[in-house]
Image (cartoon, rainbow, N blue to C red; front, side, top):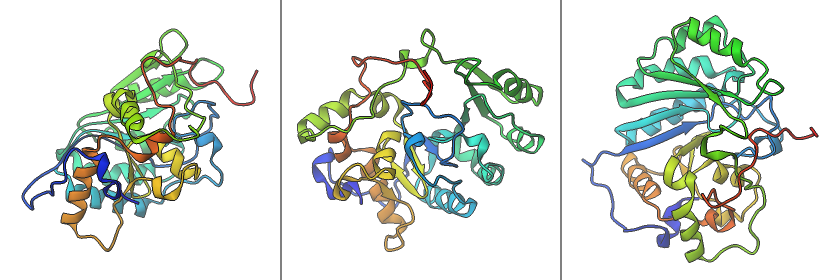
Length: 288
């Protein structure tokens, strides 16, 4: 399904000329569905997914080929978007493949939860990037059990590392949002647009999440898709693997995607609004 199906989502209806180049402010690529934490308020809701697996390397490589065939530049390229990237058996190969796109990306980063210590193999490829930063979240000693050892391994290899405290007092955006519940009945189109206009994920982060060749506007939209929580006609994403479309048609669709004023799934989402209550990060399911 494509947002092009919903003309009300867009500011205009223009096409991209053959000569026009697209710059994406941010892209996050999910390399694995697996995670060794079970965070109750996880934005992509991966603790609630079943039959989780790593995204196959060939699928990741194909997605990047398709993406960079239609986008000239990416501002920030995040390896993650859901799951714990350091668990992925395809991460090393994917990073090796990403090196060829360094001149097309301003900055790379990886966000890890401080539980998995990278091995020498992984450290060696991370060190090859000109502008790669690893953000290590610290959810506390009982959760990020290898926080210090992970940071030391990265710093010892000369890899820029951000130690990010993520607790009730110091969390970025002042805590996590509770977006678990699906809005029912769904909002009107005007209400959905209002949510989109105020949502931190759509306005501040502007994160295009790539999952198995599909581009979603945010991680919650990906969760709606993976958990089949909304009607199929409202499940909006751009399919990079659509064989029936030319590169020019995909480029046109991508422009529409990043220019959307809202997405149909916004009608079902609680949204990440600045006025909403915040919660302690990384509260684990099954713990009291």
